[in-house]
Image (tube, rainbow, N blue to C red):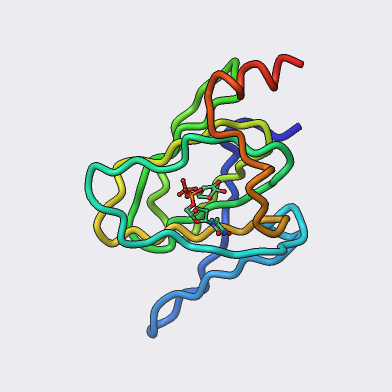
Amino acid sequence: MNMLGEIIDLQSLEDSRGGLVVAETQRHIPFEVKRVYWIHGTQSGVERGFHAHKALRQVAVAVSGSCYMVLDDGIDQTTVHLNSPTQGVLIGPRVWHVMSNFSKDCVLLVFADMHYDELDYIRSYDEFTSWISK
Ligand code: T46
């Protein structure tokens, strides 16, 4: 079982031209990546997420700007400030998560180990707490 809010450090290769960050499967991302998506242009004051996944594993990186993510496994809660293109957070299955305080320039890049499947989502907190207690 992964630690709630586990941070994954990525290396930035810097030179006079700027930085280049690498995320390799198994080396940094602890699963085979099947899907990548990114969230951008989130309006100020908007909160996203409010769900858990039954099986999906993900790593989210704010490649530009910043946002906060609250992770909640039904017992413990932790808040992660995603504000660096070289730091990702592992979002395990069975973790309720909410993203907030997006900066205007925030681009949240997410690596996922499964294709999109709405049936993998639990979008009600009551359903989440009863599902994890089974
Ligand atoms: C997550 C957090 C971090 C698709 O059709 N395909 C996709 O691959 C994804 C990710 C979403 N969608 C659809 C489903 C909704 O109709 O795009 C719409 C917006 O998705 P949602 O409301 O779930 O967005 P967020 O920002 O609340 O959550 C997203 C991911 O969906 C979710 O898996 O863990 O980012």
